[in-house]
Image (tube, rainbow, N blue to C red):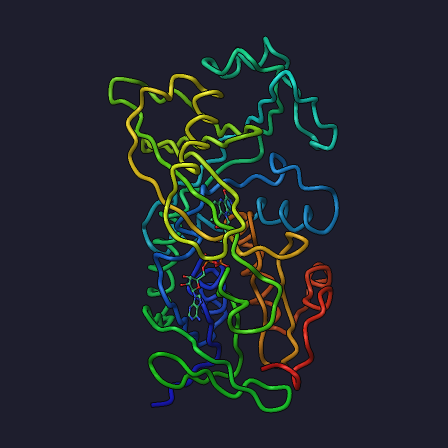
Length: 364
Ligand SMILES: Cc1cc2nc3c(=O)[nH]c(=O)nc-3n(C[C@H](O)[C@H](O)[C@H](O)COP(=O)(O)OP(=O)(O)OC[C@H]3O[C@@H](n4cnc5c(N)ncnc54)[C@H](O)[C@@H]3O)c2cc1C
């Protein structure tokens, strides 16, 4: 059976779903093909919205990240309004503590430096080995799992065709146009296609996107304690993300091991020792869960957005460490490109042309 749609999105992670919602709001008929909803890096992430704490240098990437952070309040309000669900968006600020042997990094733009006494006052209970830290009040977090659920329901509500458990095996083309997709559920056709298959994107097209594994862990705040942390801690060895529901997320390893699965003793040990050094009281908290995921990494750690070697295929992949942060701006730019042929000048910096991607007639 051949099924058709205005836009067919390959991958139902945060980028695919956010783009589907935006296109649907513009009136497009959208289908999302999702191999495995739960496998998305968007489920594994910490949900930090951290362009400043991440220390992204001034330039197009920082502009993109700041633009997306600014879109967040309005974007989550729209999604929550559509669904009646809560995304856990929390502009709580991020504190980036530094140990005495780490010099303050001058490129941490527009952060407020807190010395040893000031940081101890700002967040009681931190390690006594700290020299101080940067405070970024405009960075924050979202509960990425709640957000994914909200996006899925929003897409459903808007009439997006969501095909869960359907894998694209092959992208077929003639000349410079995609003609159809071979999938595990038959042939799928559309006028326009979007590739947003995260770390798996390089399996479908010869793009320089590879998996970078991250292991994560969650602790549970003891019921007798009032929430001990009211902001994200972005340490040099660990980040600690307190959720409003009493969980504390610890992350993350960064491993170049392909799609190797599982949590490992070395990975979990790294997280636990980093976390209990930075915030010692965590040593007595219950371990609630551990998991892993695959960041879609590119050689320059920036996403690949916009036109492809095919006239009717748009790329939205390679978001590496910042795909949760970058979801609203990506969805907006990609939907404007497809729906209104409006190519935002910022897209030029994220074109696949910056890498040696083969021309259409030499692909596959
Ligand atoms: C441990 C960890 C921590 C992170 N922390 C943060 C953070 O704090 N802040 C932040 O901004 N970002 C963070 N990230 C990064 C962020 O999660 C990713 O950049 C983002 O999820 C990428 O979104 P995506 O939609 O491109 O890919 P994904 O979310 O991985 O989704 C891709 C989807 O495509 C599907 N798919 C793959 N191949 C096919 C196919 N052939 N056919 C159909 N479907 C297919 C997959 O099943 C998957 O569901 C983190 C990532 C990890 C792993």
